[in-house]
Image (cartoon, rainbow, N blue to C red; front, side, top):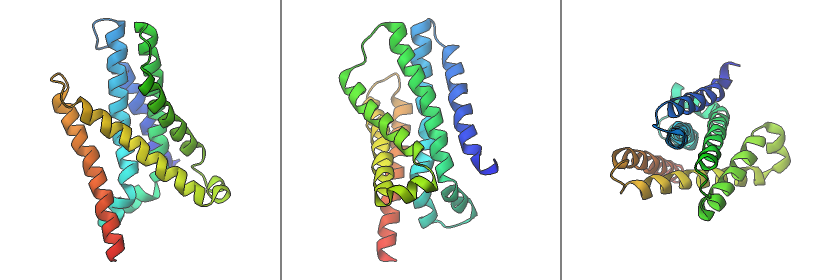
Length: 191
């Protein structure tokens, strides 16, 4: 159980963000909007840790980055748990408001969830051995696609005055994580 704590952290972060959002708005629609926003933000940090684990270890090998890399599967499962709570809040927001889910969000986000759950279900040795090279392809495509969704979302919203500071900060974190991956890859090619 000791190494599984990132999964518990993901669940706790998701439920705390859900609860905070539901208690912060002025009406049910605003409550669900805030819960949706805050559960996404809570999951974002878990995704970034998962996305950056191997790069951090390659660039700065030490006990902490080694532990992060060793437990990357559990950080990913923590993200999946938190993002499942985000999906619940997202669907409830549209249920409460009666608004239709925009088609690009439905398609793009739907594909993201398909990849997320495919990665979560195959995050074990048996699946790795059964899928072979396709396991690596699935997880590589999936993690990059999820990163892209978050990066695109934060970058595109960074022009809105009401969330500009937060969205610029999260955009910088997403781009920084990509920079880490590029730097680690270059180091690997030189070394």
